[in-house]
Structure formats: C-alpha cells, structure tokens
Image (tube, rainbow, N blue to C red; front, side, top):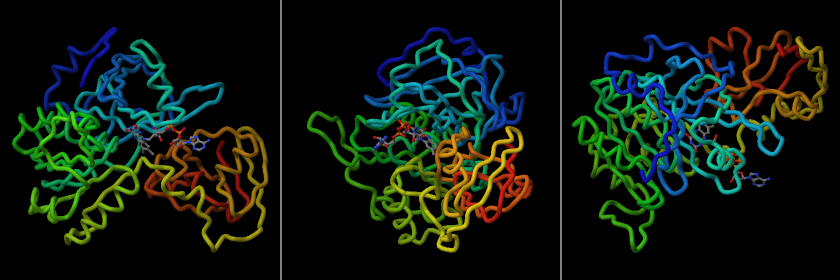
Length: 376
Ligand SMILES: Cc1cc2nc3c(=O)[nH]c(=O)nc-3n(C[C@H](O)[C@H](O)[C@H](O)COP(=O)(O)OP(=O)(O)OC[C@H]3O[C@@H](n4cnc5c(N)ncnc54)[C@H](O)[C@@H]3O)c2cc1C
C-alpha cells in the first residue's frame, strides 16, 4: 500500500473498537439487494499501481449487514449513460460501519476508470444492497483453501478478515496468483494477518518477475506439484476460488487431477467477457421463431420479443430501462417477478430457489416460453 487519502472518517473510532463479539447479524440494518441508496466515500487507498480501495459509509451512518464474499452493484452516470457494475465488498462484515470495494482499472473499461478518476473522499455513489451466494457462510468446514488471481482476491479477503476479526476456528490456506510482485493486492496486510493468526497459511505465486522486483517467492503459474508441496492436505479442504475465467478453469482441472471432491468447491468469476454466458447462449430447445408479448404491470408498457432472446436484451432494445449488471445470471441485479407466463432461466447462482418459488427470475438469463406480464 503506497498512500492513503483521508478527508473525514466519522466512524473509525467505533469501527476500530469492534471486536470479535460483533457478528454480521447484530445491529446492522438489512439493505435489500433491490434497494438503491447513496453511499459517501470516506477513504481512497492506493493498493497497487492500478488498484484502489474505496471505503464508504451510508448516509445515516448505520452499520451495513452482509456476508463475507458478497458484492454490491454500483451505479454511475458516465458520459451521459447510466452504467451499473458489480464490486465485491472487500471489507469484512465484522467492520460494518465502512464498506469497501477494491477496484482494478480495466483498460478501456467504463466504470473502473470512472471510479478511479472521479471518486474522492466526500463523493457520493449510488449502490444496490449486498447480494451473492459466494460466501464462506455457505459452509461450516473448518479447513478452507482460498485460491485467487488478480482482483479475484477481494471476496477471499473479506472472508479472511472476517475470520480473523471474529476469532473463528477456521484453518485458512490462502494461495494468491499475481502477474508480478507489484500486482499483489493486499500483500502487506495479508502478511500481517498471517503473523497475527497461526491459522492463516499464506502463499503467493507470481507469473513473471521483473529485474528490479524484490522477489524470492514462487514464480510461474500454479501447478498441482506446487500446491501439493505447500499443502499436502489440499484435497481435504473446502475450496473457494475467484479470478479470471481462464485461471478458474485451470484451477478446477488441477484440483480434479489432485483428487479434490467437486462437492467441496465454490467459485465466482468477475470475468464477464471471457465466457459469452447466458446472455449470448441460446439453448437449442428454444431455437424457434416464436414471438411473445411482454407487458409491464406498473408502467403499462408492452413490447414483443423473440423466444431466442433474453428478456433483458429485448427490454433494452424496446427502450425499457431495467437495472442490470453482469448479464451472466450471477449478480441478481435484474431480479424481477414474473406475474404471468413462463420463462426458461439458466442462471449462474444469482438467485435463490426460494425466490424462484415466489416467481422471481433473472431477466438477463431468462427466455420466454409464453407471453409474459412482469412486475415492472
Ligand atoms: C459478482 C462480481 C463481482 C466483482 N467484483 C469485482 C471486484 O471486487 N473488483 C474488480 O475490480 N472487479 C470486480 N468485478 C468486475 C466488475 O464488475 C467490472 O466488470 C470491471 O470493473 C470492468 O468494468 P468496466 O466498466 O471498467 O469495463 P467495461 O466497460 O465493462 O469493459 C470490460 C472490457 O470490455 C472491453 N470493452 C469495453 N467496451 C468495448 C467495446 N466497445 N469494444 C470492445 N471491447 C470493449 C474493455 O476494454 C474491457 O476490456 C466483479 C464482477 C462481478 C460479476
């Protein structure tokens, strides 16, 4: 970490004094994932040359309730266009007064560059409440293996910080892959946490090392041999992995070759471009020329669409603004109640079964199989 800007920090006293007695259940207000509120930026931290952390508090200064590993969907108007993107909350729920996101600049990317260039302490940003099922609370395993690459470190950082803040009896092995030593996000803090907690085992591996880098650690890509050397018991651990799509498929193959049981594997990808995903995938069973009518119950708007399109992309073409972000059935931002009719939904974990039972669907990965009435 090289520098930190701080304008005001209304709650650091309280936040610093929070102890392991705090859980993500206590005192914190529930902020639904379909409810937008303005957050105030309190700090901006330069993590690496192209990664910044933005810490926010709510306008009413109330603590926020979330689970470690969940994300928020943030909105901004960039060049006159409304843009929404998901960012994992990198801070832990054990420090609920300030929620942080840690953003890597993506070359040519709209939101990441806008956040880096415009957000300052005192700025406001609109966000939807926490969402997502990639969380360490999904498992009661005592022994975990966190595997991350690049900015995929963020959900695992929230889980690690929470585990240590709360004194949880979890044995965490954290293996992080980076391009170069200068790209290791949270390097010093992770090392400090590993010094604090004998239950945290930390390993970094860098794909490349430049001449002036001070690095005596592992280099190259993560291999089964390297993982087995570091962690002979890795196959018995509950695995949580996050990173670019290519990294995750390599890791999945490596774990399979090492005898890890896929039932104990959890993953999240930020990479919405590497895999075309549900927005672009048309199931062959729906390759028909059927046309359906979609009616919006609140606005009384109606549009027609083909059975091969997702409801979200058809709505966008028809000029209907619907909050959305990942287009992958991951983030849950476009969750909408289908009041009448049926859809074929192929999601990627962005909606819970009980929500589906209540009639909710993710429009980004749902194709109509009849005329529809949506609660919009
Ligand atoms: C659940 C979830 C959690 C996430 N958490 C994090 C996190 O903690 N930290 C983080 O940094 N990111 C995170 N992301 C990724 C984040 O949501 C954004 O996708 C990322 O910041 C890029 O957004 P952007 O608007 O800057 O880029 P975009 O504008 O969406 O561009 C993405 C890519 O497409 C290219 N592109 C854009 N426009 C064009 C065009 N017209 N033609 C060709 N190529 C183009 C860009 O060059 C870029 O390579 C998360 C994503 C998900 C789904």
